[in-house]
Length: 231
Image (cartoon, rainbow, N blue to C red; front, side, top):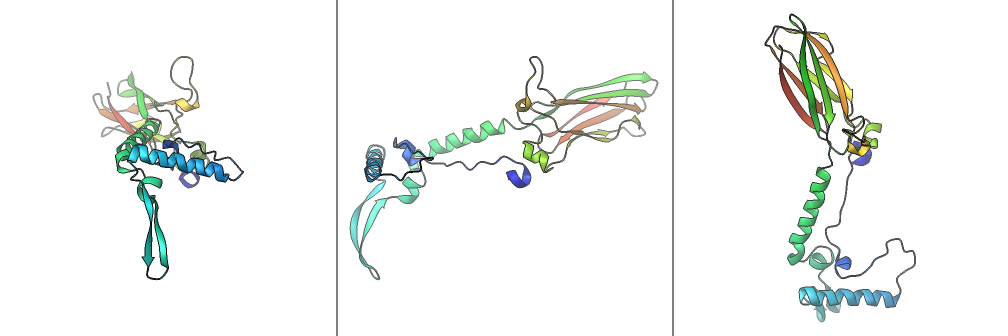
């Protein structure tokens, strides 16, 4: 997602048995775990199993006659519902935490807005239209530098829909305005974040009372529009 599409991606683990049992794991450690340390870890896991699951997460070893292998032993941890995945009683907690994690990241997404759209009559039938496009979100509308680098998404653009018979004297019906920065890119002491807004001006010849639609289109920040009356 990141390298090819410029989209930040996460692969969170839904369950941490060692953490639940109070076992500290040093992922950067280079030395192998000693037998004494391994035994201490397993004891903590077994104590947690007795305390939280009444011993149901670990099957006592028992002998079994296998048709090909002969006499074997079966038992140990329940791999699917204790080791790899949460036991049923903890499933709701894990889902709740993951939901909060996802919603928190969703609130960081770009959110475009038309902060200002006004009409000023310059002469009979001639109107100046001024539009201020902004991003109220935390992330920029290109999401991350990688997305901008590989041009994974189109630049934001302003689209004007003119009333019937109107003519655009200044500006284009569709204008690319680049990408809008977010709060992640820096905040002024007062006002909005730096470079989070772009202004475009147009001049339109049209009959008085006509309705003009201004649309802000962002591939990752959404689509918003507003309607103006030429008067």
